[in-house]
Length: 414
Image (cartoon, rainbow, N blue to C red; front, top):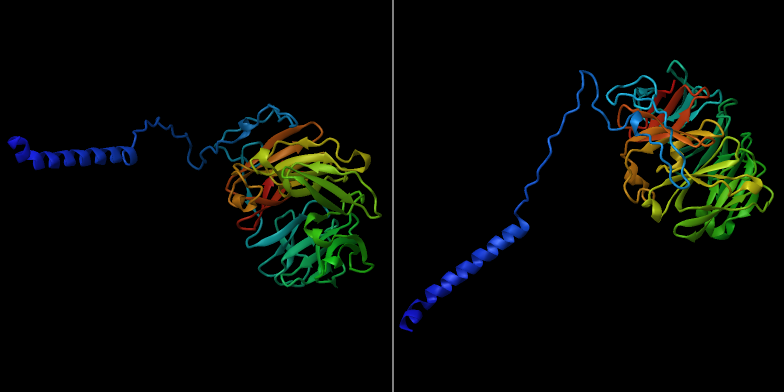
């Protein structure tokens, strides 16, 4: 007893230290100790001087598989070396040529189908780039700080919108300028370029209408009352003049009903849209509608669809193209063919928050709606986020604007 009493304090101290050491080791092992990871050896790609390392894409990436509702891909992609930069689009890395320097906006193919015309944000002028790559002013007139340009199909006139709400129509052939009401917005031209549809947004929701008029703003006519639903109405004059706008009505989170507004109060059929964030584009004849939307089954990423949109066939032939991109990153080159810029990677939720894709890199695809083939056309030799995609009438050249630089570039398709 005397022994235990004499060394009791020493035993308590030793026991306390042992507990502290044990707890310290346990905490270290649980939170700080790193587990060794065996990393397999990395084989460097073989390149020659002046060549680029493989992008991991190239012609081999297009498969022949299909999925329900999808379109089969081309089984005949050319086998291009992933390190070769081709002067023409053959399914691999493809040379991109810059056509201008400085910021531009609203590039469009000219009426002859060969040149590109655009607004230069720096000097406020409109230019046309000819086949020699020369930028030629479309007019000597300067338009400072234009916020948005809506071109007529004949590309000879356009609605120019300014940050303060002012709107003008300018005719580049006649050099005539006409002012439109400030409370008009969301403009779109008729197929003959002689009329426009827009939304007249009065301060009072009871004074908000879908309006059509001549392209100079005369002969204005209130077509449909839109009230508090202006944000659900899309001004979109179809190439076949069947409808002038579309209206969306929510069904549930993953579906909307899309209705078409005609010139004479027609009771057109509606079609179903699989999701939200609707963007649309008409085929050349106006009998088909390409659209993109996101829903919960697509990880909230935009997905391309096509549907018949004329007369009694409205809503039929709805097809999931199995491509994650936006309709405004596509362009029709015929009634059955289109080119699309497709992000190489898209994060979940990009459809709901498109800014998540502002820095993605795009590749170019060709889609044939008649045969059902989709084909990787080109992987640009640089990191480009593609917008304002246009293709020359002979399909020899593809033009696009890079979203970051807002400069115009060209790829040789043939």
